Length: 138
DNA sequence: GCCAACGTTGGC
DNA sequence: GCCAACGTTGGC
Image (cartoon, rainbow, N blue to C red; front, top):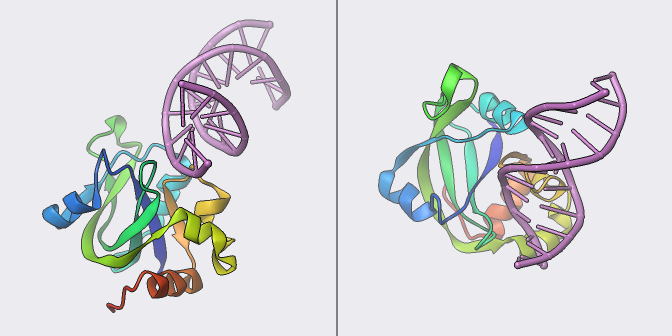
C-alpha cells in the first residue's frame, strides 16, 4: 500500500469533475519520473488530489482502481495512465502555504520538486495531512 | 557527450 | 506577468 499526490490545474480538470465522473483515466503525463510513479501505483493505493496554479491546495482523495496501461492520448504507447476513483473531499482543504509552514511536511516531494505532477507521499505525511484536512474515512 | 537555446510547469 | 527550476532539443 503506497500513497501518492497527483496534480491537476482545476481549469483543466477539477476535483468537481472527478467527483461527477467517479472514475477517470489520469492521462497526459509526459514526464519520465512522473511516468515511473504512475507505473509503480497499485490497485488500492490512495492519492491526494491537488489543485495546482490557481488554488494550490489538496482538495480530496482518490483511489487507484486500474494499474498503468498505455495512455490513449499519447502516440506510440510510450506513456501510461491509470484510472482513479473519487473517495471523498477534504472537509478542510490543505493549502500549499500550510504544507510549507509545517515542519512535519518539509521533506515532501511536492516541495522538493515542485514541477513533478505525480509524486510519492510517505505514510507519515499521509496520516498528518488527513488529520489536518479532516479526512477521517478508512 | 557537452552545452546553449528554448519550452514548460507552477509558484509568486 | 514574471521568473525559477527543470526538461528537451539540436549544433558542435
